Image (cartoon, rainbow, N blue to C red; front, side, top):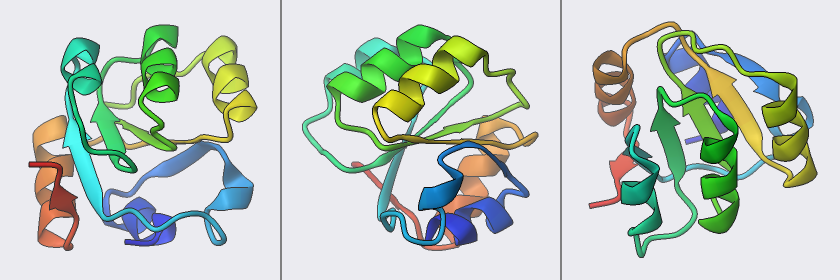
Amino acid sequence: MKLSDIIQTVDGEVICGHNRIDAGPEVEHAFASDLMSDVLTLKHCDFMLITGLANIQCIRTAEMSDIRVILFVRNKPVDAEMIALAEENDMVLLRTSYSMFKTVGLLYNAGLKPVY
């Protein structure tokens, strides 16, 4: 899926990485979790992380796991430190007001594949 399609599907907003929305990577797989320890165990690479955990640890976990797109659910606030680290790592941060359950269901129905 194109990032613009993901944003439209979940009525999302771009927090950071505006310049990568049209020219950015297409997303084929996603993983939803608030437990960063679960994210670190994944062998799959190049997927979008869907999470309600909005803190610097989320960005650092994404950095270690080569995740380039993070979608925050439940309208979680993202602070300046998170945005700066994401920009430094060329990440796209998105946000939706939807719950994780609704977000995942909408994206799955739109064709996004699970990691496993």
